[in-house]
Amino acid sequence: MKPTLLALAMLMAAPAAFAQSEFVEGDATFGADAELGATLTTGNTDTTSIKARLDMKHEIGNWENQYLLEGLYKEDEEEVTAKRYLGMAQGNYRLGTNSYLFATAGYEVDPFTGYDYKFNSAAGLGYRLFQGASSFLDGEIGPGYQYQRLDDEQREELGYDSEASWVVHGVLNYEAKISKTSKFKQMFVADYGDKLDARSETSITANIVGALSMKFAVIVRYNSDPLDDKKSTDTETNMTLLYSF
Image 1: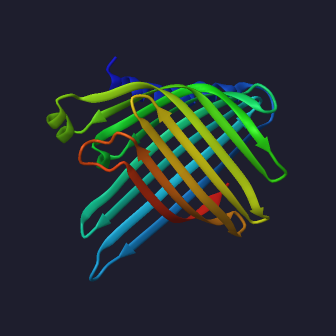
Image 2: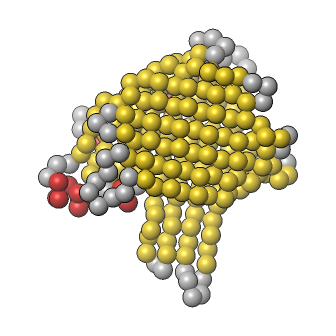
């Protein structure tokens, strides 16, 4: 099977595999956060900026399934300056109070990196490293696989079609309640193989009314070995409205 088809198959199969737990007897819970931010200006300056995100979680028995869809689009003076789309699915199986097994797969499109798309998958062990009264820290580690398809320009320049490697996948996820109506989150994700790919997301969420909140987030992406005309670090700052249901 071609790597492209393999990547798509694994990404599509991940949520389906974990969805079978819906038939297990017991209480099931489902929750989701829908997030949207946009900036539109016309006149002397024409700009468009849209950030959308849907983060879903389904729990039943010992299973906790997570699904994420995210999109970013920016345009200045009719020129596209940023475009990124991400889909991710992860299943966690609880072994005990603090430990769990996980399997995850993600597919990302970001043409401004010189790649048509990137596919990541990993599996391993997760553990709650710290549990406080209003905060916690989770860690995950395990082997994974990364596949990146070069765009037409890079394929012609470099003389090959793709880059692939086995990686060590690690995650640190910290969350703390600041007050009754606000919380702080810090997530760090790293894949280390032939190079280091890392992503850090820092956010503060404050409730406005009911299920509606305001979220401020700073996202930093790092690639230790970017393509020749690309930068190692990308940053993204967002202010969005978040609705929980």
